[in-house]
Image 1: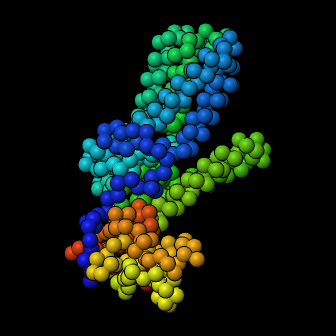
Image 2: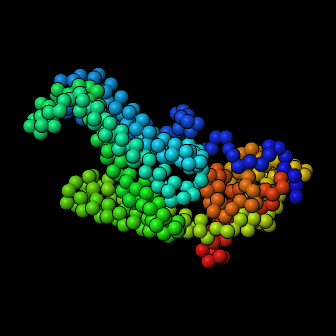
Image 3: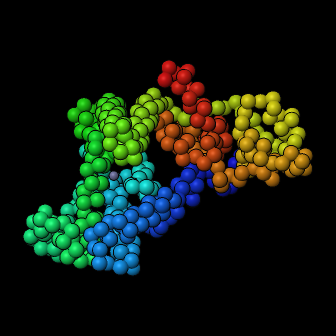
Length: 402
Ligand SMILES: [Zn+2]
């Protein structure tokens, strides 16, 4: 087997393309990213606050006032989403689980844990921390607002909402929007549909009682699917008998929850059946190397077309210098193929995902999902000993009766 040339095999990639969105900074050593959809939602929230909500409450306010408060409110809204995710992350860190990054998108975020919680108790604490933070922000905002508006505010709002709202200053106006929104977020996240926070809380409780993570996941994802169906059903009723658009949201969210619950169930089945196995049992060992000094045209005509192999480690003499895939080859314009050597288009080793042959089975899916290239080179003692694609895992599952 040819030796690998530097850089040394590593599975750590400096800037994963998969992360999506853009980085907005680091907090507690965690990379904080925002998906591009955040910009859209930020704009929508600011626009609707500045054009409808605030002018409705304060007909006497000018455009400048409405917009500056709307922008500040929208920013604090995303800051509270971030606080929710940070709460999950910091509890996870406290319990010894590393966090890759937090990505904010649409109306929420994800804190990406490097490994699954080892015990039901830890999972419970991590899952409940986020909604607890949202609830705390909600309650503190409302408490602060009530200090500004005075104790008789509820009575005044009940008597004459328009007149009562008019008397509220800028800061309490912001707080009166931010507080309830955070309470709604806390409640929505606690809906016991796995993989929402509430579903994770439910799973940790079932896990704690039964001592069986697999069963607990199946029960929690089933509850998740039932709730998703109920949501879609109620949404559909609303679409027919209420407002079409009003009903569209629950249908959309229900459908999203349904597929998330189903994916979690499938993932759990995969993890369970890979338990006790290692990557070396799944990898493809019957593969060939591509000579770096061969031109693309000859390589395609004489080798690629006669093999089922789709990814090729490329070597220069005895050194492996990179990999090429059928897609890389196809991307080279036909007229250039006869004059370009494989070594020219091979992806350098630094961009390739290397994994160790003794990687435990349940880790494989996560590594594959992280792989930009959809294929991993399996190394043992500094040598490439196998390849692994998603399709190979599926074939293994089929042969092992799922
Ligand atoms: Zn959460």
